[in-house]
Amino acid sequence: MEQDHYKTLGLNRSATKEEVKNAFRKSALEFHPDRHAQSSAATRDAAAAQFKKASEAYETLIDQRRRADYDFRWRNSSSNWSSSSGSGNYHYYRKNAGYGGGGGGTSGGNYRAGTSGRSNGFDWRFLSRIITTHGFLLGVGFVSILVGSALVIEDVIQGAWRRNNSGKSFEDAMEALEKARGEKDRDP
Image (cartoon, rainbow, N blue to C red):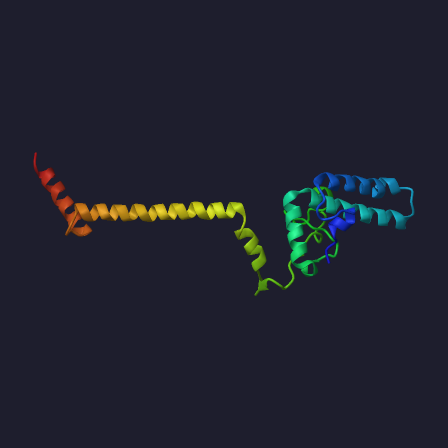
């Protein structure tokens, strides 16, 4: 199961950005690897792991979009989220981003939804999240306006054609044009 970033930093879910920053600073000062350079290997490893968890929690909670996505996932099915590596990395935008954006290896950060919300391998929750974004809705609205305008323009053009060429088909009109061009070419 994914780590609770709020618990990692000792925060409640309504914490402000300033509270997130302060909690991370406090945790970073306590668990930074440089601070434990002279400690035993076990203490050093435990501190490094805690520092990494705090860094991941900070990365997620300080960014508004990542935090909203994290809260959405946590509310809806915290037991359905799993990591392919068990490392606890969570990244909204970049797969395998790791601490500091340096990559984090090939196995970290690969979260995927559990079986709920999927049918035949298709993640319906992801689709619903994409469809309800502001940019997507604006794009759909713009395309709808373009298609509607094209249909109206086509209808107007056909109406004008019928009005100006009543009783004639397109082929008849083209023949009349060819005949008029031929007569024009013959007259010197």
